[in-house]
Length: 158
Image 1 (tube, rainbow, N blue to C red):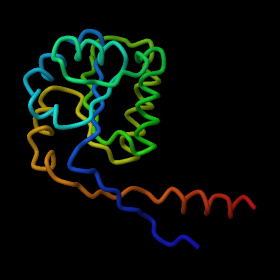
Image 2 (image 1 turned 180 degrees about the horizontal axis):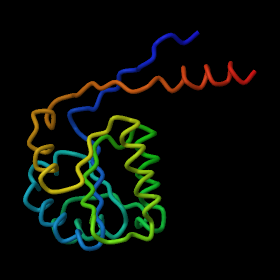
Image 3 (image 1 turned 60 degrees about the vertical axis):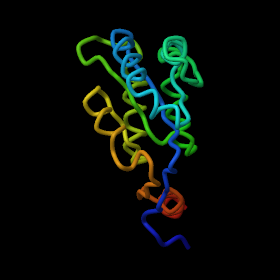
Image 4 (image 1 turned 30 degrees about the horizontal axis):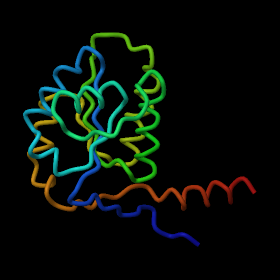
C-alpha cells in the first residue's frame, strides 16, 4: 500500500528550461535571452516552434523546438513537464491580446502548477528566477503522490 501523500523531486543543477512567447512578446523574450546568454547556455533549452527558431537565429543559443503553440507546442511542453523533462518555464505572455490557443496555454499553466514547476510569465519574474541561487544548485520540491491518488481512486471505484 502506498503511504506517502507527497514525493520529493529534484531539479538538477543543469535546468531543462522551456522558452515560450506570444507573438507580440517574442522580441522581448529574444532580447532577454540575449542579455542572459551566459547563464542560459549552461542549461538545456527548448521551446515552442517559432520562438525556439527565432531565439536560436538571433542569439546562437541551441533551443530544441517543438510545434508552434497553436499547433500543439504548449501541450508538448506540458507533456515534457509530466515526464520530468522540463523543470523551468519562461513564458512571456501577452495579457492584452486574445490568443486562439488560450485553452492550451491554460492547460500548460495548470500542469506547471500541479508539478510545482517554476514559471515566469514576464521579464521581471524571469529576472528574479534566473538570478536566484537555485539556478546553480539542485532544488528539491514536493509534489502530490499521483500513484497514491490513482490507487485510492481505483479502490473507491471498485
